[in-house]
Image (cartoon, rainbow, N blue to C red):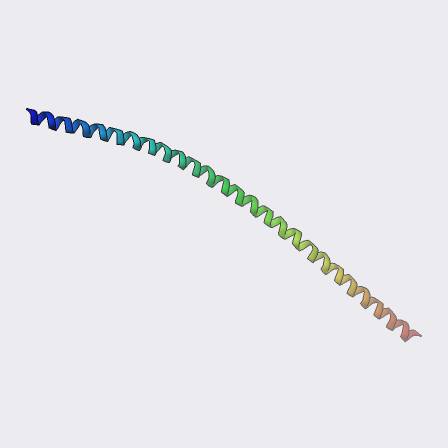
Length: 96
């Protein structure tokens, strides 16, 4: 009978140990759920930030291309003015 009591006591100790471990595991599981929710929030924020950054990059590209276009227009106008002046001078020399 004594041996049966010892076996029962060991089983009860083991059960208590398992119950404590299970409680700890539930706490870990709750923390993992919380971390998952946080990761989802962070991923969503990162996606929104990336979209915002992409919009800004497009705007910067547009701003960068504007001076190039304007400079090309100015160069074209200068070349046209010089060509017009040269042609006028040549016509003036021919007529005189």
